[in-house]
Amino acid sequence: MSNPPVVTVIVPGFDVEDYAQEALDSLLAQTLTDWVAVLVDDASSDRTGAIFDAAAAADPRFRVIHHDRQRGLSAGRNTGLDLVTTPFVGFLDADDRLSPRALERLIDTVVHSGSDFALGAYVRLRPDAGGGYSAGDVQPWVAAATDPALVGTTLEAHPEASGNIVAWSKVSRIDFWRRTGLRFPDGKLYEDQVVAQQMYTRARSFDVIPDVVVEWRERADGSSITQHKEALPVLRDYLEALAGGLEVLDAADQSAAAAARVRLILAMDVPPLVRIAQTHPDDAYRRALGAFVRELDARGTDAGSPPDIAAALLW
Image (tube, rainbow, N blue to C red; front, side, top):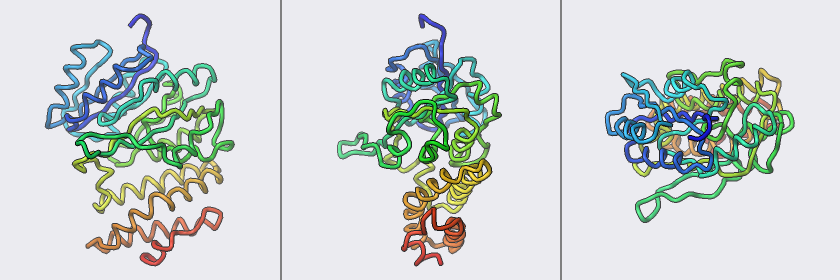
């Protein structure tokens, strides 16, 4: 590097040997080269740690931390946060890919605006007929959060931003994390949900850009935790995260953002869960989902009503 690094990218990974090199290559391909990365191997049983170590041996911008036991994605991100010495921080899951100008675009807008963080759009990488992965289009709810570009905005002015709840679509000032005490909740799945709403409600201002900054992988082997919502413990963590994010918005009196978030949950999150519940062998699954949907409905008509299919199954 010719200049001091300006951003640390935290890359946690567990048993992602088939994808980790692509994630690291997407960092190496960045148009902004003044970055460093903390690669956190969460006690992988495959070659993930070795891939991380090889990257660090080849490029001093990579630093590797090996957990001595599996501690989860939140702990991996928190491990990285404790080591950040750069002005900015971002996240990349080790099975995803950054677009080439992601860091340049996100950091450029925050540097010029003075905002606490910036968020961008993302697309899903899905398995294709050729045995690889192809990127899809920006989905409407993603576009609603990130298009058009906004500088120095707030949740009051742009409540649809609350629908962008993933950690890896954002670059932040590290002093924002430390000033507000932000941390990822250890031992929880869907850990982004609550943290994202805390970011929106605690920020003095943030920026949005319509650029695709990340390609988010849907694994062909179905091994991602987000592909196992049929498991009751996963469902419970998922619903807890959704409810927790709404509680953050409620506590901050962000009623417009909470209503926007409920509309999105009812439109995007609930219907797939209802389809699982229709044939699920454990009635506890239906009860948990039913209680959650009823809580959403009780929030009022301004947030919409549960889909007919949910009402028919769960009421």
